[in-house]
Image 1 (cartoon, helix red, strand yellow):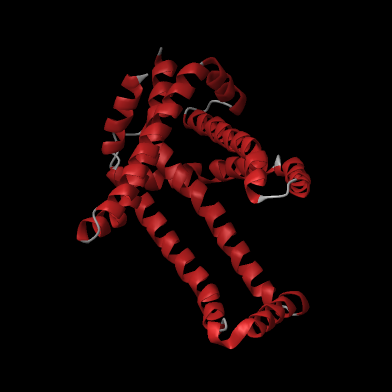
Image 2 (image 1 turned 180 degrees about the vertical axis):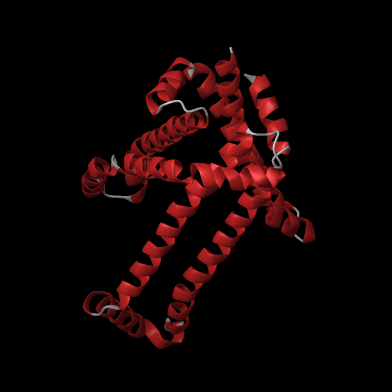
Length: 272
């Protein structure tokens, strides 16, 4: 198990183009979200009444906001903006996956060339996989959402509500990660022209090793994230700023490392 994680680290180290590309993508996406949310929230905050204006002014502010939200077409622009951002992410995510996965399977090629070639060859099937993955991820919400509403009506305090919802939320997050692992192996299979059912069968057969690698990588990611954010609070100043700015780069590395570790298991079992 540890050999696959170690080998995955080495393989990821040899993927500079993929790591940098993923880092730039996440950086640009963060800036877009920051600017978009800021363009919506900041004007609202500027119009929020000062404390000296009294409670009546705040009631009037909320009443005006409710009227504009319900009686006008003001929300339409924000809804279309949100849908546009969601569509862009759904398109770009499988494109990047295609480049990353193909790069892992073709280390003998130039790092930039193999990434671009992977995008050209695998984007369409990976896009279809991503649509199915998204649908399976959201499907339980058809049952969970009414369940959450029922629990909310039966609880009388926020702590009680949080306690009641926590097991369901943990279960749903585990389900999301399981779906993620399933489609990770389906995408591995596509690299070797193996069908989805063949890939899932291999996942089931290797499940103890797959889950062990996944848990260890989640722990490594969690420890690193906690250490990075703790350091920014303890060492305020230039060092904290540097850690904060470089965190997306290390996070991108950890993500590809997690994929590479599972891929090394796939490749080893495929050879054996």
